[in-house]
Image 1: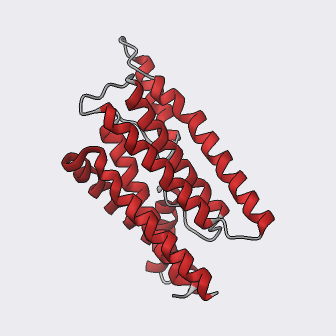
Image 2: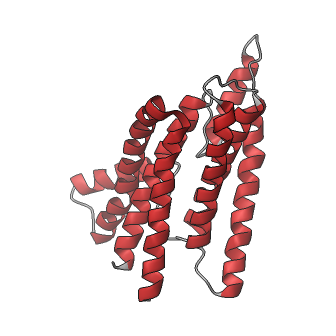
Length: 228
């Protein structure tokens, strides 16, 4: 498999995981966004504006959790630079490990979740940490990878390039960029839809699917390393 094809597979897989996990977290954890932090700022403001005040502790803890996970991912990448090894594999393993811990925390949380229940908060924060690692990995391990967790910029670029394509002003670079950006958007959308149905059917056991997909990316990375 060529480097271009591996990048496409990573883009599709991580885009799917981004939409899938974000939806599982949103449905299960009272509107929590785990794949990106900006949406939680809006939710915090909405909760605080209500007469009841709501429960904002989990959403308040998401931001520092996200920051710490990105910082840890950076430290892992720096170590890989010193040892002259690729950062993608340890970062994928790190993300998978955090999702495993989240799944373990979800077991005592049970079906009766509450926003301020300790195990529910632990589940949400470990999922957030896992997605923080994915956000960081896109910049640290795959610099050419299109963003796989936040689709606003991707959709904007797809629309701009599509307009240029339709008016006949799209050169090869525009066509190539459109191809790179449109696939993770589609994968994210499919992942979001799948995540909603998966959680409805299997609750947090739905996290097993992204774990299998991450394992597949690790295997692909190992095979590419051996061939290289």
